[in-house]
Image: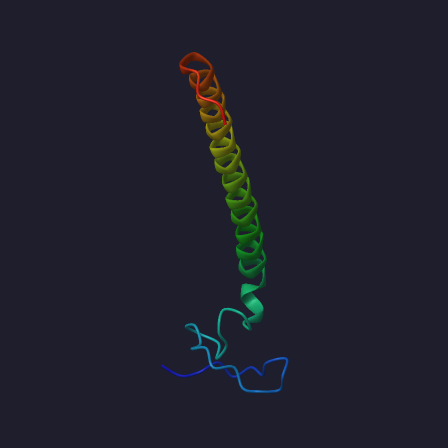
Length: 83
């Protein structure tokens, strides 16, 4: 398998292996521009989805922590424990 024939922004030869057909990798092949844009779009959506998921998990942990703090406060009152 040979390397991509394109040059990077830094002026160095691209070190990725080329895809079938033209001597360019996925990132440099002109005919794959639509696929690259789609991949970037999907990557961005995945990132947003991951951020949303982490925020929901964090909010769930905070909700659990608040419930535990309330339960401890009630237990302290019931059993006469003071801070």
